[in-house]
Amino acid sequence: MAETVPVQHLPRPRISYRKPARPHYLERDDYVKPASEIDLDAIDFVDVEQWRQHKMWDRFARLRKEDPVHYTPDSPVGPYWSITRYEDVKAVDVDNKRFSSDASYGGITLGKPLEEFTAESFISADEPDHWNQRKPMQPAVAPALLRNEFEPLIRERTRAVLDSLPDDKPFDWVEAVSTELTAMMLATLLGYPQERRRELTRWSDVTTNPFDPDICPGGREQWLQELNACLGTFSTIYAERQSAPPTNDLISLLAHGPATRNLSPQELLGNVLLLIIGGNDTTRNTMSGGIYALNKFPDEYAKLRDDPGLIPNMVSEMIRWQTPLAYMRRTALEDVSMHGKTIRKGDQVAMWYISANRDERFWEQDPDALIIDRKQAKDHISFGFGIHRCYGNRLAELQLRILWEEIMQRFTHIEVIDEPSRTSSAFVHGYTWLPVICHRKA
Ligand code: HEM
Image (cartoon, rainbow, N blue to C red; front, side):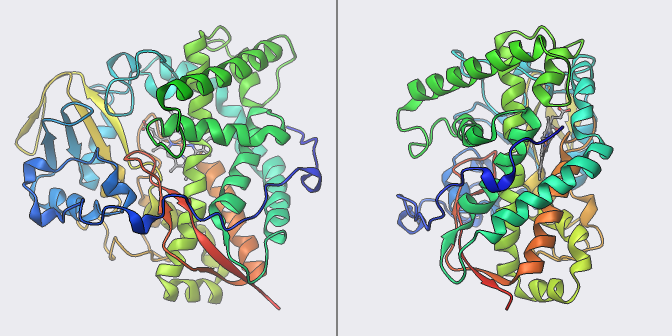
């Protein structure tokens, strides 16, 4: 996959401090009650305020202890079950005979898909459709391609982005680094023009935040309009790639794959959005989360300075600690008993990866802490488990490893100077703003 535009020639976004319009300290501090002050039955993770204020941890801890298979009878997304312990999440994730991802039952996020706009893809398909569609996409993340083509390309871009950062001056890490690097990678994967890479970020943000007034001030109408623009753009590219010789970019692979060469508009949009969101939000939020975590745990930062050889293990630990996708949903295909409860056929089940990754039953060292040489770091469940296990996991690890190798070459400290602002989402666990100052090595 040859890269045609040298990174030095790409237009770069303005680096800024960009304090958010709705600062976190104006949020309703009293709105999210401590877990000990609410009825067990009332615990519900759908209200996004608890995520924005980052006050969901004690609720998960309480459920893990008192009610590991928890039923929420009434919520804006309808009734659903919460699975919160590590071993239980893993058991549901591998049991794709009894727990479905299929879009016809509701797919992989809680609630009913919006009727005006359906998007289907292989993440929301069961076997054999899932594998028939996933298999032809494998060449785009093949180990040899990652090693020989992506590694030098990612390193060159990472160096250019880090070298352009201001010294000793505050700026927003999310915008200047995390979003920029993931957008560049995504444009390469999709064979999309680099100059227009931020359109991909925008479509990812719009899709995952339809009800966030900061992102979609025009509400549902704007949301539909922007996703229609995304579909229009990719329908044209898909048609062009169908009539061109096959290459390893993801749209070409879709256009030539036996099971994906005649996708309906909904299926095309679904697969494009899956790749855009999968390759964007997740890695981006781990890039920001890692900086934040090392500032929260300065002894770990010191450990890293002493031994940069810890970076590969630290990358797994950062992905565990951040858990950029908080859950995946399944639908029960038959009645299933767990911990004395009966999940009924047709019920929605949320596998809370974010809780499993903090389960004190599984993790031998404090699960709430970032411990960069944690022995079990690679056992995290942030990539899921079973047949839908993340398709881009190796690529994400590669991007994060290179980022940290290059950071350690250049900076003595990347200092977080204020609490971050966070995504208003129970699904994407991330940051919208992370103000930092970079201290460059002499
Ligand atoms: C699937 C997380 C990076 C593309 C998944 C799933 C999770 C996940 C939890 C499982 C879905 C399920 O079980 O239903 C992450 C995390 C990442 C990351 C935490 C980074 C730290 C990426 C990247 C790409 C990507 C870079 C794109 C190249 C996908 C795709 C699937 C997937 C296409 C669907 C796989 C399937 O259904 O077979 N990811 N992801 N992900 N991810 Fe990732």
